[in-house]
Image (cartoon, rainbow, N blue to C red):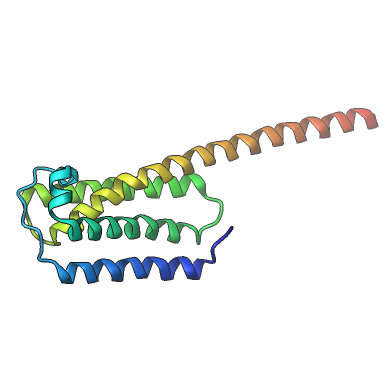
Length: 158
């Protein structure tokens, strides 16, 4: 079943709004984390359930946002994979820098969400890359077969 792009966009915006609502209810995090992944330990996840829910919801919205934008571009699988890989890397690096330096440019919750979404974006990047390789291989094989058929038809005419 294919969901129309408008519904997908509304769902993504709804997830962001729900995350903002949860962030408005709870106080900002001020944890001394060494990396963004330390929050995923069960003690933090259970101690801060609203923040954990907000983090997961924001991560899902941040995960689907670039995929929704990529759905507007047709059949450029390797380019999509490259963009997603670069985006995932930048998300990881920014979240790590933000947590390590405690710069505070964005709230800690957003840094953690960027980190989780960046990890999750690696999977579609790999899938798009494999799809692009398979499509390229299929086109090359089809072209070889077509050239062979043309040569054989030319030989038969002679």
